[in-house]
Amino acid sequence: MLKVAVVILVIMLVYAGIYSLMNIIAPKLMIGSAFKSVAGKALGDVEDAGYLRALSGERRTVGLFALTTTIAGFFVLFAGFRKGQQWAWWSFLVVGGIAWLWGVIWAIVTADKVNMPFEIIGLVLFLVGILIPIKAFFAKKQA
View 1: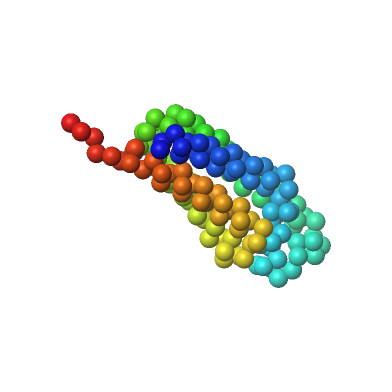
View 2: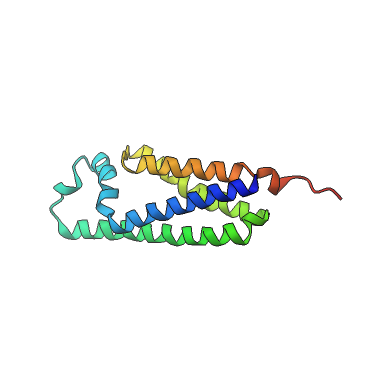
C-alpha cells in the first residue's frame, strides 16, 4: 500500500503545485469569489489600483509559499515517506493537514466557490495518501 500512497501523494503534490502557480499567475481570479462574499462587491468594482495591486501581491506571495512547500513535500516524500520513515509521515500530516484543512475551512467560511473545489480535492488526495499506508508506518515491529 505504501507504493500506492506514494503515487497518490505525487499526484497531490503536482496538483498543489499547479494550484500554487494559479495563485501566482492569476491572483485576481483566485481572490474574486472570496472577496465578493466577504466584501459584498466584486473585485472589479474596486477603484483603488494600489489596493488591487497589494491584494494581488499578497495572493502571489501565498502562492509562492505554497509552491515552495510543495517542492519541499517532494523531498520529504522521496527521502523518507516512500521508505516508511515515521518522521516523513508526521511531516505530511502536520504540514499537509494545516494547509489543506485551513484552505477548506477558509473557503467554507468565506463561501469561496472558486477555491473550495480545489481545496476539497487537495484535502481528499492528501487524506487518502497518508491514511492508506498507515500500517506501514505504525505497525508493531517484531523483536
